[in-house]
Image (cartoon, rainbow, N blue to C red; front, top):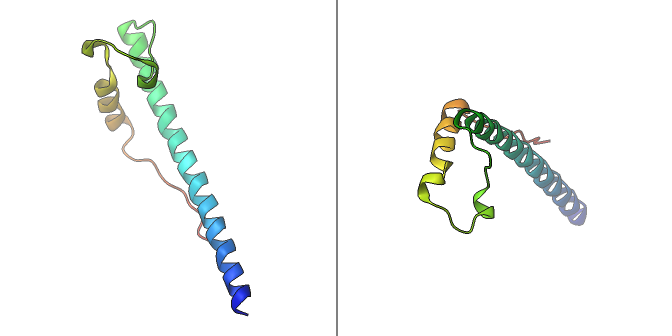
Length: 88
């Protein structure tokens, strides 16, 4: 009986872990989409012809970094991101 309960508990933990990962993936996807929209809008408005992620850049002038402007706009447009997790 103990082993059966232990097995059930492990299965439940695995199910909840998968649910948490799925919820986190969905939340990150929502965040990515919002960032891409902001960067696209900003690029059109400012006339940027190329925007690179920080991981793609070895060195650049500080005045070329739009991270702070994007983050400020993100804070205004996306107040929260829901983390939907099944608990059953």
